[in-house]
Image 1 (cartoon, rainbow over the protein chains, first blue to last red):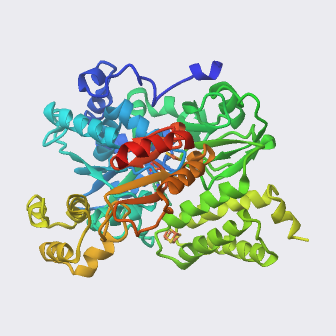
Image 2: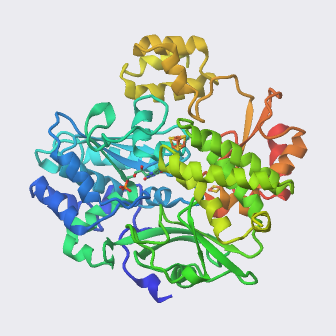
Image 3: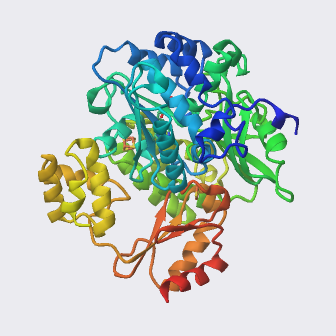
Amino acid sequence: MKKQKSIKIITKYWGEIDPNSLESYRRKSGYEALRKALRQDSEVILQEIIKSGLRGRGGAGFLTGAKWQLAAEKNSSKKYFIANLNESEPGVFKDRLLAENNPHQIVEGLIIAAYAVGATRAFIYLNPCYKKAKMLLENALREAYEKKILGKSVMGSFFELEIEVFEGAGSYVCGEESALVNSMEGRRAEPRKRPPFVCEQGLENFPTVVNNVETLANIPEIILNGADNYRHLGAIDSPGTKLFCIDGSVESPGLYEALLGVTTRELIYDYAGGVQRGKDFLLAQIGGVGGFFAPTGLLDEPLVYGRNTKLALGSGGILVLDKMVDWKKLMVSWMRFFQRESCGKCVPCREGTFRALAILRRLEQGDFSEDDLKDLKKIIWALEKTSFCAFGRFAANGIKEVMRYELVQDFKERLI
Amino acid sequence: MTTQNILLHYSPQRRNLLPVIKEVSREEGFVSETAADLIAKYFNLTRAEVLSAATFYSEVKTKKQPELIIKVCDGANCNLKGSEETLRQIELFLGQKEGDEHNALVKIERVSCFGQCLSGPNVQIGETIYDKIFPDRVIDLLRGYLE
Ligand SMILES: Cc1cc2nc3c(=O)[nH]c(=O)nc-3n(C[C@H](O)[C@H](O)[C@H](O)COP(=O)(O)O)c2cc1C
Ligand code: SF4
Ligand code: FES
């Protein structure tokens, strides 16, 4: 249990703060980081975030400072900042809990972020299922306007900022930043070709930075206690803490905050109470429905963002599976998800998820042929190599992992 | 509210298009071609532009919907907790399959994730999301709605 007592940045005041009250947030040094930031040049804040080494918590772990710099350097009459709270990955609910427990931490991070890149309009793009989060965020914004923390003169400075909540319309792909921008413009939420990146040319063609809300919730800490301090938390090249949503065959499923670099074994045993009594651990799937597998041999791999990792973290979902898991049923459920949520823009994903689902259904019903296996492999290849956006790769990955670890007898037998 | 009335609350900039079609869909049950034409005219777009957006989103409907929609979460976490069995019970009880559109009163849908995964299987009936809906609980819950 020792790790649980370690450093917390995001969940530090959960339960202590009344999420309905700005005053309550203020009593825990709320908006002190913003006050400090506004006393300095926006360039200094940008440099501080670059120096912190903060990486995005929305999935890819992109360097936040580098992304901000691209937008900050753009000469433009208008810039936008968007906090991404579309969260719709099965098994992931961290952003919802963040908004429900400490909405002002998101708002404060977003204001500082907008200041650093020179944006004067910002949005919180919200998953429409999240009714309670909506109410609390809108209340937080209203209070911030009343206290002149938002509006024409943020905390009495020359900086002007408006923030509003923009409710999405129920689509997983909307969370991809260029699809998100399309949906805000009233178009189909299909990803755009890049370059140009949305941070250069996004909403209404203005530079638009999109960050996950957990990323933004780290900003006040970095400004208050300094980038040097932050840089030394967690892992080298992947600093800070991360929210993990742990579910499946563990004693205490839940949301836990741990330093990056934590191992899956630590998360299961030190945080989530260990493998459920009476269950035989098989593996943990890291990073949601398209995630990689951590069997016993990979349990001590540190979980970090960045290139050199065997277990891409994604948005932090961890599903612990025991030996009783029905793989065929689970794969069908995955593929139904990918088929339902595919935006339909590109053929490999639109057709591939559809065909793969039909094949996996046959597998589930015991009617799986040699040709099916060949076709499935071709589809997996096409999804992985030729899809327009990362969604296609996610759709392929789980099935590939099942094949790699030979978890389904039919996949093995047909190979001979 | 009628489509005309809804439009009065928004300025005709593209950023308001999705909020408008969502509200029209919610208030009138779906976005009809007539409504799409009104919206298109207001935003200075074509009907095709409005409908291509409207048909994309699961929260926006372009066909008349049954009165009651039952959404069963099919996310991996709910699935592992038994949402398939819950869905089977609902299908058996109502005598119709997920996705069937012949019944003007009820429709059953599978959805991706409500973000309430720890307390699955989750089922949304009308506007309310219910948690821990195991097969043995679902019939009583449905009876309350159907009577
Ligand atoms: C299919 C798809 C879905 C995504 N969904 C989300 C999401 O729900 N929330 C999110 O923050 N990022 C999501 N992302 C990542 C975003 O594109 C983007 O990288 C992220 O919001 C950037 O924020 P960050 O740099 O703070 O991580 C998704 C990406 C893809 C390809
Ligand atoms: S990979 Fe799938 S989600 Fe991505 S653009 Fe192609 S169809 Fe859309
Ligand atoms: S998987 Fe069902 S609510 Fe998330």
